Image (cartoon, rainbow, N blue to C red; front, side, top):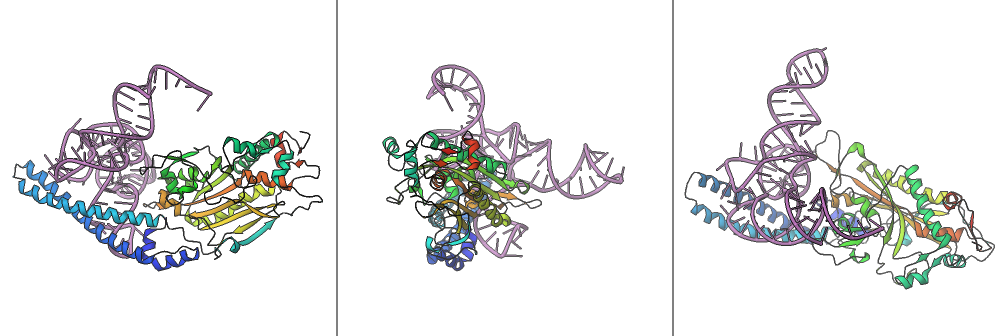
Length: 432
RNA sequence: GGUGAGGUGGCUGAGUGGUUUAAAGCACCGGUCUUGAAAACCGGCGUACGUUAAUAGCGUACCCAGGGUUCAAAUCCCUGCCUCACCGCCA
């Protein structure tokens, strides 16, 4: 959520910035709504004030044994006016809330302006693209040959399209990857490991911005009711991890808070039917190791660089070639002020594919969540900044290894750093 | 799932319809005193929103949440959530 004060006072400037990301703000509606809001709120609070004062005087009069009948009638009338003013105000506030909650974050100055993913800017590249002297297979075929390590048919049987069953060494490598990532981030990057719920309430989803706009991307356990009783499967651990800060005030010396968690993620993939139907790239359920940071506002841009580097380290240790893209204004997610995507090289697709997305949300989520910090000697708490990134998507990392580490004989080499997690073995071979 | 007891400020805890602002204590901050500290004493001490140049004043709201009754609700009524204890079931 944007700062309502900033929105009001800098309406045109806000609209200009939002235009960069392809969002057109109806400034006239905003201005009109705001004018109504102001008049109604002032009026309502005045009436309230008057009623409180008079009710109090009734109490006094009664205590002194005076006749209160005429006073009662007067205040009763006032109550009617107050009720209707309240109702009007509530209506306007509802409109305002649904408008403001639907406005995306403002892009940072450093974000390249563009319309879609074609306008994203490559920041750097790492690693050598492997050359193969045999016909490369994609990860589906590689795993199929290895004792049906990826069993999509069973996934369909058990659940439906976009579900998979992993078996044997492939399943173990999937597990090993998550362990490796968690160990790296906790032991070397200073993150605290967390185990979190996979089902969250509506308030959490509002906090990180999935609601009210993107409910259809989620799996819900029951219809979401207005009072927020229904629970939903998390689309990313960003939701539970970041919401740990909801309604909290952190002393400044406690920041930054750095959290990581390995969780499954559930996405309905509404609107992406037909895309990436083959293989592990786009599943309804996938595992991810998530990185979240809560930082002081002045530190968040530097923190984004660091968090991105933490995710990159995973790829580097696995020796997987990748590039870092700065997402353009038109391609960024709803709450992000700036986003770097990491894209890993997939030989079979002969291109780079997203494997991590690292974003600085600035105070966008913090404002929705009332996640704040208190500085030494300053009375008023201020909103902190939140960041999150994948470190990394486990399924897609598995894809990258199967494809980049495939051998002519059909086996797959195990990256050195993963070998301790796989009983010291060096290959997954056909003989296994 | 059953029965019972509860949810009040950072913490403890009083408060069953009005009588100045939710009593009091602890913690915390500032001051007096002191060589310094402690103690004692004095004062301060929530959050959000609005108004505003203002993190100054003033106003409104908030005693788990949402409704209701009333001129007036922490207090009465309804619904939900959560916590604790015991019982049942269970990985």
